[in-house]
Amino acid sequence: MLLLGQPIISNLFWGEAMKIDNSLLIQLESLSKIELSESERELARKDLQSILNFIDTLSELTTDGFEESTSEIVNSVREDAVTAAPDREAIMQNAPSVKEGFFAVPKVIE
Amino acid sequence: MKKICDMTAVEISTAIKAKEITVTEAVLAFFDEINKYDGILHCFNCTDKDKALKRAVEIQKKIDRKELTGLLAGVPVAVKDNILTKDFPTTCSSKMLNDFISPYNATVIERLLNEGAILIGKLNMDEFAMGSTTESSYSGLTRNPWDISKVPGGSSGGSAACVSARLSPVSLGTDTGGSIRQPCSFCGVSGLKPTYGSVSRYGLVAYASSFDQIGPIAKDVDDCAALYSVICGKDGHDSTVSDIGFDFKKVSADNISKMRIGIPEQFLCGEISEDVKNAILKSAEVFKYSGAEVEVFSMPILKYAVPAYYIIACAQASSNLARYDGVKFGFRAEDCNSLQEVFINSRSQGFGMEVKRRIMLGSFVLSSGFYEAYYKKALKAKRLIENEFLKAFEKFDIILSPVSPTTANKIGEFADNPLGMYLGDIYTVPVNLAGLPAFSCPCGFDKNNMPIGMQLIGKHFKEEEILSAAKAFQNVTDFRKRAPELSFGGESI
Image (tube, rainbow over all chains, first blue to last red; front, side):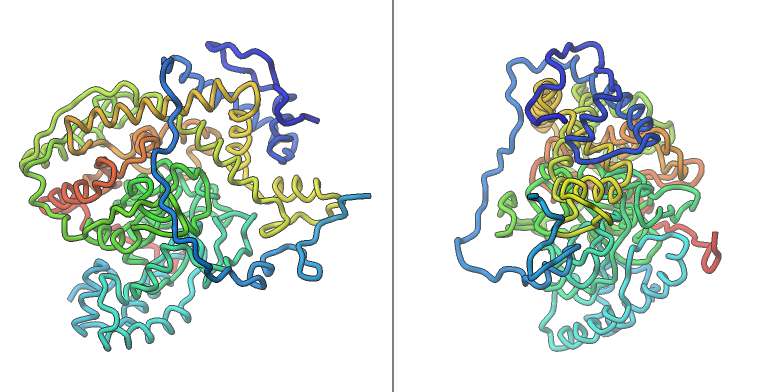
């Protein structure tokens, strides 16, 4: 089980695209909360590898001395006033499982 | 008088106010076309004729009493299926949201309703707006009205195809990396990707939040401007929306005579088809003839736009789509024994392959060890691309370019080659990275009679400049007036 925040590999060198192997794929599935079938995994490995080889062209670009772009839009906020909230019943109607007005899931604590 | 389905939205509302036609007649005219052609084209995920007709009667009364006088009063409008509507399901063309009905309307929907527009249905798209062909839709693909063996483009494929086939006078699409402009180009209609921060995203199902914008699709510039003037502007539900408004009346073909137009040479070489390149060069001549100055210039940074875009967009997608967990709404897998199984099985069964691929790519570029090399690097590239555009706009008012390197591709052409599909976004994604407005409109046809589109990119919040230039172009050309011949009514494939 992969823990968030734990490096998948410790060193990354530019110039050679990272190899997507089965264990990396399984780690990505775990991070994404997705499980691929064997046939999907082979397809995903091939596609992600070609996409990764391509996005590695970014490594040619010199970005030293530049800050990352973040939004420069100044927040335009509304008046802090009480307004009507969406109807609770309408919200709960979309829930896959409801018990006594709450979202229901399989038991979490033994 | 013109057939109603060939009229523009502005013509329809004018005819209604002049009592030449009724709102009910307008609604019925488009439902007739939908009945004839949508079985084959599949532009719509759903329609509701009864509701539309009921509303038509109410709106007619308000127009008669002069309570509704706006540009879209009584006009039928269809919207992409990732924009929340209380009266229709919102599926995002995904199994994940197949039964989802929103408890509230998106801001753009509220504004359309206040204006007196009649919603007729929700439009097909690539699943969660991820794709450039509308083939990744869970509800099945949409066909291009000009050639039903071809795709309509994407992700707003249904939105562009329905206007092209005259199944709706106007529609709303959304654009994250070209999803309004490219299908408009493939289907021979006009569409505006507004400046980031000009249209509220409240009620738009998020894909990549710092690129997503809702925009109008129509048969001409005036309709796009009319629809845009209704949906844009400050909204308390989305703090990124600026209060810089848009004045419909500022759009004028006369403005072209003072304009300086630049064409990046990087957009005229490489994989571009000869037909597309020639159409763009001919369009440049039209602008010169209309009084603009046109010059080719160099912008080498553009080659890095596609990789930077896919890194940032997939990173944001992986975060935004974490909400689909099978708990509060959306699809839940059966027979789950633990909460973890609910998450994993619901997502594995509820998402299609393209969505899974982008979530996993996003997880990769954001994960510890890769974050600096990919995500942060892409954000720096985004900054460089923004800077280069700002530099170009010191010299030019507008940048002219193709929308897509080719015309519409065959259905299935990119089934085994997602990267090939991504590369087709080369002319559209730089605009999203820089947050600029861009207008896509028809400017020619290729040797197979498929429409070609051009893109006019403007300065931030200068929609009126690109729309004015497009209007000048429209006044001396008639590409927009050509409609596809639909000869398949009643057949089945």
